[in-house]
Length: 120
Image (tube, rainbow, N blue to C red; front, side, top):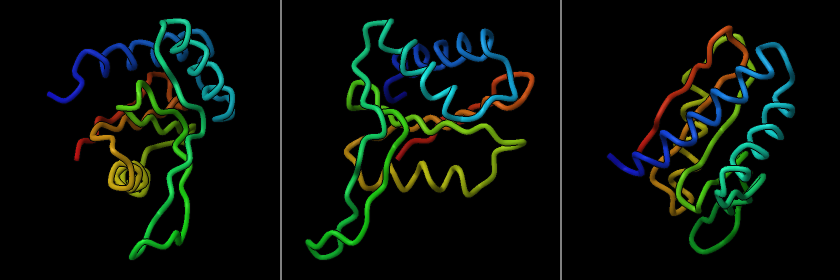
């Protein structure tokens, strides 16, 4: 399993944030809290990391991943009623344009944390 221990550590941090803040807040609150929690664990975290989309060597767009941990795991945060396939597609796009192979899609809106592990 790709980045198994790091993935578990990140999900544990997400659970910690969810247990303290609960559901119902705006995504930005969870984003900031998770950044704080991950860095408190001693992890290297990039906040809103930009990835360029290239077509035949030309930049045609850009994506901003919510959090990138240890330059290996992309975390996409949501605060929505339910995750949809478009959310997973967003993470897969990030994985395809980055050097990362593991993405975590995390939804803080529910009474319990909802998350998906995506690998390319």
